[in-house]
Each structure stands twice: as C-alpha cells, then as structure tokens.
Image (cartoon, rainbow, N blue to C red; front, side, top):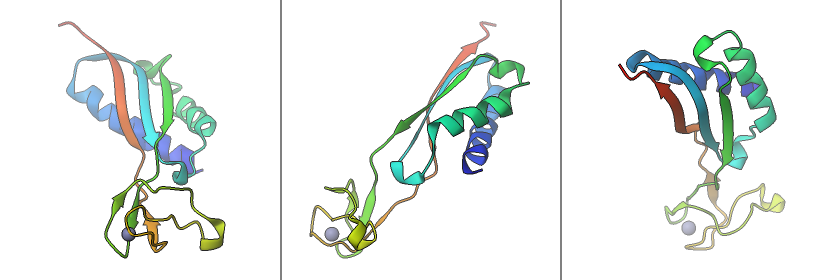
Length: 124
Ligand SMILES: [Zn+2]
C-alpha cells in the first residue's frame, strides 16, 4: 500500500524531531502533495493511525493532507512551475507550458512534504 509507506516515512521523520527536542506529544501534522502523487487522504490517515496506534507521543494526534498544484518542467524551454491548464488525456496527460505552449512537458513528482508539525513541548 502506497499510503502506508508514505505514512511510515512521515512518522520516521517526526520521530527524528521528537529525539531532538523535548516533545511531550505530537498534536497535528500537515503534509502536502500534488494531486498526481495519487495519494488517497483517507487511506493515508488510516495508515497513520495504524502505525502510531501504540506510540504514546502520537496519541490523539492528527494527520492532515493538503493538495498542492502540480509543477511541470518544459522540455522545450526549461520552464518550471505551475501549468496553465489540466493535462489532456489525448496527450497522455502532458500539460501545456504557459511560456512557449509546448506539450512536451513532464510533471515533477516530488515526495510528500511535511508542511507543519504542531508539537507540545516540555517547558523545562
Ligand atoms: Zn515551454
């Protein structure tokens, strides 16, 4: 399951933060992904709950996912950024470059990014 490995990677990164700081508990994690990463938010949350089920510092925490705009790179003119329109199935979902109008573009697949981590820290 794609979502399970993503959730697992998120938890691993948060655990690194917990090790560094005096964290009492994790309250909220916000991650972002482009719609073309094919991540199903419900499945991601479910996997997160399974993974953190017996982890005390993750008790009652929530994982939220935001969808970010896709980013493309144009092979013709090197433009990198948001496309102007949705991919067209006739062109194998290649996006239209807003700079030169070429469809010779590819979507930049980025790993899911952790945007915000809301932690409860010890005052000591
Ligand atoms: Zn271009």
